[in-house]
Image 1 (cartoon, one colour):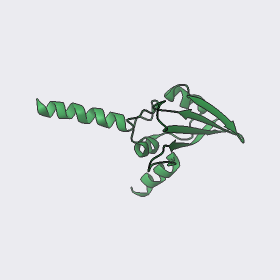
Image 2 (tube, helix red, strand yellow):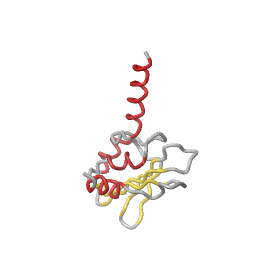
Image 3 (cartoon, helix red, strand yellow):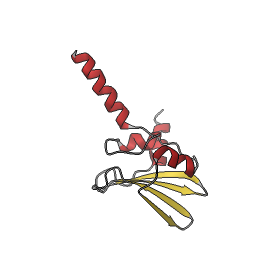
Image 4 (spheres, one colour):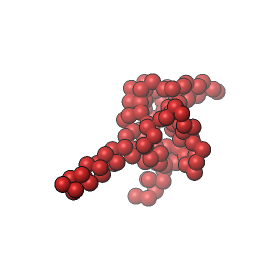
Amino acid sequence: MSKILCAIIAATLIACTAVPGSRPNRYNYPPSYLQAFPLNISEAEAIAKLGPPDQTINSSGKKMLVYRPNLKASMSYSVIVENGNVVDVIYNESGSLNGITATEEQRKAASSK
């Protein structure tokens, strides 16, 4: 019985760490989520996968679709859109992972293979 329970808990934790086809939540591990996030998809595809953003910011020809996993916390994922396509995703928080990006995490993953 305990092996089954451990397997269920492990599967749940794995599912929560990186689900790039869904809205980010407070249980996502940011480096894993960013590493798996599909870049170069259209803005429409991103919104279809993540749902409507909590905030949209337009600046200097770029658009940021901001998703806040927990509206009471300061963490956010900003999907950067240029010319209608997602070019990066930036994770922001007040801790040690502040400012990491999908392009950085994907580059690290590719170089470690």
